[in-house]
Length: 197
Image (cartoon, rainbow, N blue to C red):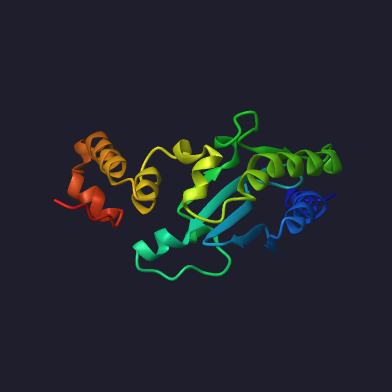
């Protein structure tokens, strides 16, 4: 009897890994990364903490790291991003609502069919849209900017030079979380954004 982890490893090995390798991603366990210009692309398979025996599941996470945002925060971007390096990070279903949040496996799962389904979905939803994204300005073409409601859109607008929109988004976030003590200044400082007076 194979465990859920072994089944998921097989799905990654036969589906995701070869497809992502064709697109220039490097593999590290359940994570994949590549660089295009001043942008790093990251993808990982996250095992559910509730996996037991042959039954379990996994999530698909998609991320993007921008050298401009690393510089804004005073950091040096790594050659290949890892999870904590990404300023844009979402579950794949945020980019494609037809995908489930959790992919399930058990003893009856057709692993080849699942591997093919996931590989095609990841390529179509994540990889192909990012193939031409090699700078922060090019990211807008993906249509993903608002997949995360707070922080990232403001920082993105700031590093791409749209200070008026960045300011508006920081104010919206401050207003939304005012009951928690957030102010325009505290949100801007937390995001490492400095606006002219």
